[in-house]
Amino acid sequence: MATGFVKSERLRQLPPYLFAEIDKKKKAAIAAGRDVINLGVGDPDRPTPRTIIDSLKRHVENPAFHQYALDQGSPELRRSSAAFCKARYGIDLDPESEILPLIGSKEGIAHLPLAVLNPGDASLVPDPCYPVYRSSSMFAGADVHLMPLEPRLGFRPDFDAIPADVKKRARLLFLNYPNNPTGAVADLAFYEDVVARAREGGFVVAQDAAYNEMFYESPPPSILQVPGAKEVAVEFHSLSKTFNMTGWRVGFAIGGAPLIAALAQVKANTDSGIFTAIQMAGKTALDEYAALSEPIRALYRERRDAFTGALKNIGWDVTAPSATFYMWIPCPNGMSSTEVCGRLLEEADVVVTPGIGFGQTTDGYIRAALTVETPRLLEAVARIGRLKIGS
Image (cartoon, rainbow, N blue to C red; front, side):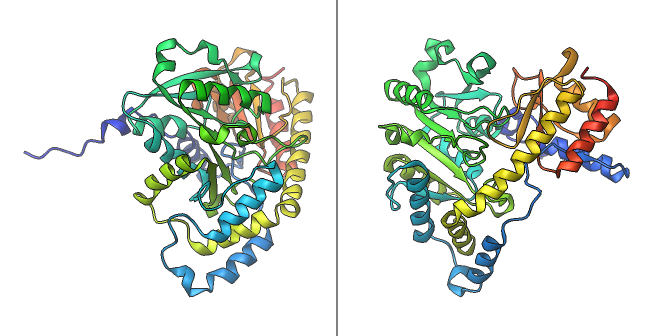
């Protein structure tokens, strides 16, 4: 006798996707007629620059672009990605074999574990982290080992604390600097250490560089600037936050040819590439990186400074991040992150993200995204201040 549908064990092992749950609560509040200030999900509020939009308009008229895209991505986008990496990082990349366009960096990050992990392998995942690192490792059948990001180490993992048996089974290490949600950055010395450990331990490094271009002072480095890194590392770049293109779904992976070929093989069996007109608009964005990215950074720098100053004025302990558009804020007065977020939504109509949603070790923090205009940020702080939970 037939029974009702039962989800796969892989899906049942996953927690509810954090941002979907937050969005559900936010929509309920808005439906009730409340004036909600949403500092939850990191989605830029400003539109994509006009130059990129006009590029898409031109290229969407080309009927040749209405057919299936090339599995390896368009040669034009790959060449522009290589030129960007050379100008920004001084990295020499072969556009034919060391660059792979992606349907957003999230897609590539989700597919890489299928290319490098076998069931029973260990995947080293930071805690807190972007949830896809955990879920993609689980889908590949690997055991996830969480590495707390230590505040004393600048929100970096303590690699020496990883158990010896886990190190023996480790085949993949996820990193994300500049970091979501903490805003922490990494320097070349850190990457040099990581590359040396990867070469010695025989594991692959997946460095999520989605926020590399959202810096306020010094430009963050690429892990591929380290000699020998191509042999062990894949770095994921995204146009989403750099150019206000989250909905366009375009990014690219860079690394040594064997690693890029393995990722491309997974992609060839799971998707049909990016709409070519969008790839050409992505090429325009990268070609005009310097002119387009600085005004976006300046906008978030102004918001960061205003929000940080206002929170300090009401007695909250905050540190301005040097990169990303996120504020990683310690919970006041020993409160849990879910308690703080619940009170801010219910009593102040302000949406922020609980730290516990990013990992097991981060219940003492909340994350706020600087994705509303400065007057709304200041209004959010004024509402929070009236609750008197931070002083």
